[in-house]
Image: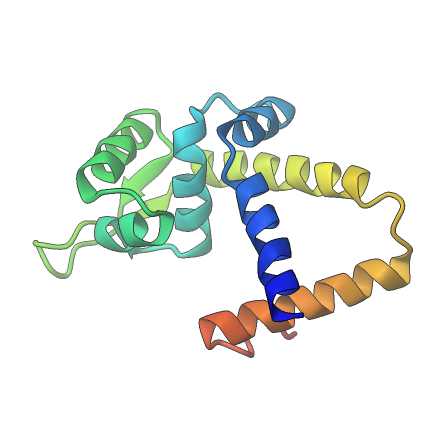
Length: 148
């Protein structure tokens, strides 16, 4: 059973890590970003004030490539530097433009999920959400993060 859980998670992660999925999502959201920028915008939106080093660790890229992508997003008006308490650590947040773009991405993602899960009953969707939230809490050690 544990291997079946791992295999299902592996397929889900593979789905989400495909650049063509990001391209499609950005097209549906009508957002003019490169697919490489998507995980950065999503993470910064989820964790305002995140450092470039933390971003790189969380999305599995090296510091310099994340820093270059952040610079592009800053130039495009999507990201800004947070107030620096430590001059050695560069932290970023979304601008209002970035927040609007992230909302468009979230709406497009929700529409895509509604379409993919159209054959699921409301009960099945609620159970799926509950189990995935429980798993996320278990894996991250933050079991209360998804409970309202």
